[in-house]
Amino acid sequence: MRRTRPGCTAVRAAAPAAGPRPPAPDGSRRPGLDWGGAVRLVRAADEIVLACHVVPDGDALGSMLALAQTLRGLGKRCVASFGEPFTVPHSLRFLPGQELLRAPADVPAAPALMIALDSAGPERLGSLAGVARSAAELIVVDHHATGTGFGTVRLVDPGAAATAVLVDELIRRLGAPLTPSVAEGLYAGLASDTGSFKYPCTTPQVHDLAGRLLAVGVRPEAVSRELWDRAPFGYLQVLAGALTRARLERDAAGGLGLVWTTIGQADREAPGVPYDQLEGVIDQLRRTDEAEVAVVLKEDDAGAWYVSTRSKGRVDVGRACSRLGGGGHRDAAAYTACGEPEELVDQLRAALRPDPDTDPAENAP
Image 1: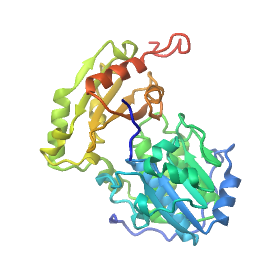
Image 2: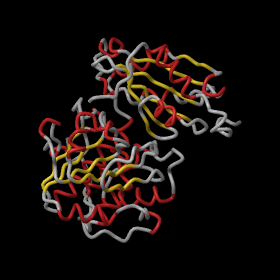
Image 3: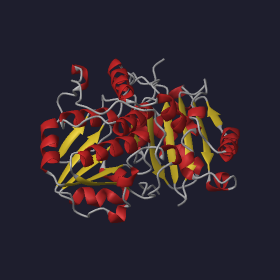
């Protein structure tokens, strides 16, 4: 059986005062999207509900809080939320703007305007999917290639490195200033989805945006420490166990290799490590030279398995996860399922096999 996942203030150096935004370079204007429609809806709205995907990462939460703070600065009443479990991951508790977060139960059931961020489809909103369907107008801001086409106004660009790139452009088109706290959320999103600026999506435009955010006062070393360089001692014990259980299958993924491991509830409960602190495990696993694809199955508190996948570029894990009810990007994707880990890996292994009729070039040496 498969099911869809249900659902502090950082210390900063003194920063320059916020002022008018400088013109963005032509490459960052993201042509072809309905910017006019989005700006008109936002300007006409008095109250706006924002939502991002369940178990938010740095791009989802950072982008949402950056936009929420901007809208508040423009005089809008706004609340931001995400579906259960409604818990901000430990690594993201430094992000400013969290006073605007509300539990899903406290979100208006049928808002006049809702903005969904970093969510390829309504199911990614978890318990807030019904709110999105009931909204009179729904702006979708996203960069996933596996989207389902929902929303009345879409700012969706699979070519964008992060949803933060699109939020930055929306903020610019709204004529709002780029404050230090807004810039920090955008930088967290940009750094997260580019793998600290090492993934192939890191373009000259990405570095240009990062530079503009740093100029406002973002401290990259502080953001990086919060995102990647902090963990309780118990996390090291969980990581050690996960690496010990890791299995290498050289013939999987079209012969390019698959490495995978599991982290069950018991594995993290003994050392007292919350579920939301497991994100970094897959970054260690994906270093395996003999495997193109890395997979970590993480059991949540409800007993479901969240299957995180990463590719080094030659296998489309986004398509494989989409086949199994999830989605994401070519090189990073996930889905949620119930069952025994070995059975789930069997299903994923099958989904990773290239289709010779439609993908003759995929997995070619």
